Structure formats: structure tokens, C-alpha cells
Length: 91
Image 1: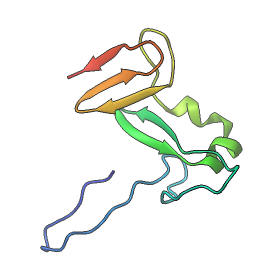
Image 2 (image 1 turned 90 degrees about the horizontal axis):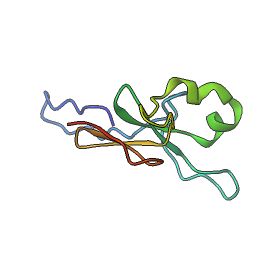
Image 3 (image 1 turned 135 degrees about the vertical axis):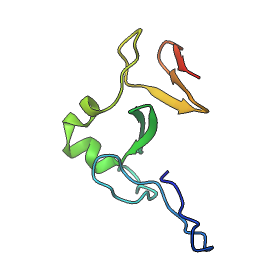
Image 4 (image 1 turned 45 degrees about the vertical axis):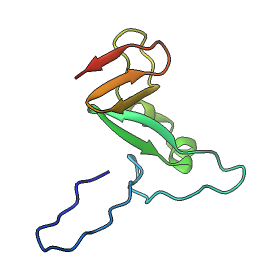
């Protein structure tokens, strides 16, 4: 998610977007696939189903695990956790 500007006193709702194309998140239709979670630059990102299908090079733009090379990473509370081997970095 992007930071919210509260300088004018109003709260702006900022929805997460696709890391590749910038499309606002939505619930995919049946058979369309799911949003992929990844980490890029140490931050959690999402990739929409169309970008996963139509832009096969998207995975080259995301971070990889230092131990096993997997792109199955999650970023939470200042740590990046590999969902494949359990390696934890950061914090």
C-alpha cells in the first residue's frame, strides 16, 4: 500500500495496485487465477492475473530468497520470510 497523505485533514483511501501494470486490485472472476504475492525492494507487492499470464518476465523484477532462490517471499513487520525454505531476513 502507498502512504496516505493526511496534510489536508481528509483521509484518502488508497487501494493496493498491481506491481507491474498499476491496475487497482479486484476480485478475479472464476477461472481467471489469483493475485500473486511477491516482494520487490523489500516491500510486499501484488501482481494481477492478466500480468501473470501476459507478461512472463514479471518474476524477474521481484526479490529472491538468498538461501534457495525462490520468489515465494512475504514481507511483514520489517522482515522478509521465504515461504519455500523459511529463511528470514531483515528486522
